[in-house]
Length: 60
Image 1 (tube, rainbow, N blue to C red):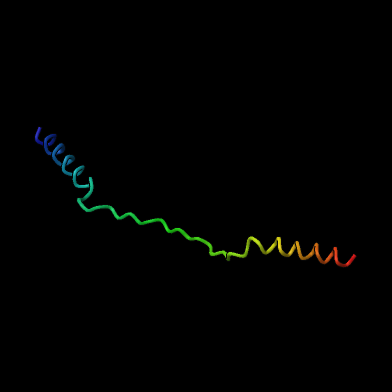
Image 2 (cartoon, rainbow, N blue to C red; image 1 turned 135 degrees about the horizontal axis):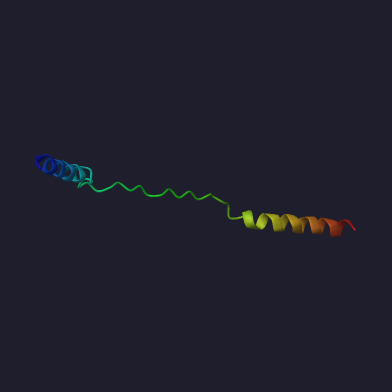
């Protein structure tokens, strides 16, 4: 009977010992990386296309 009580006491002590601590967990913020784009990148291709069409019309 003493072994049963001792085993119960040890298992109860072991389960609370590994339960955790009072310290707050450290949570790291996710890193967000944005690619830098120029303001004229969206208009560059249509301007080149317009220049090619104008050059083709002017050469005829």
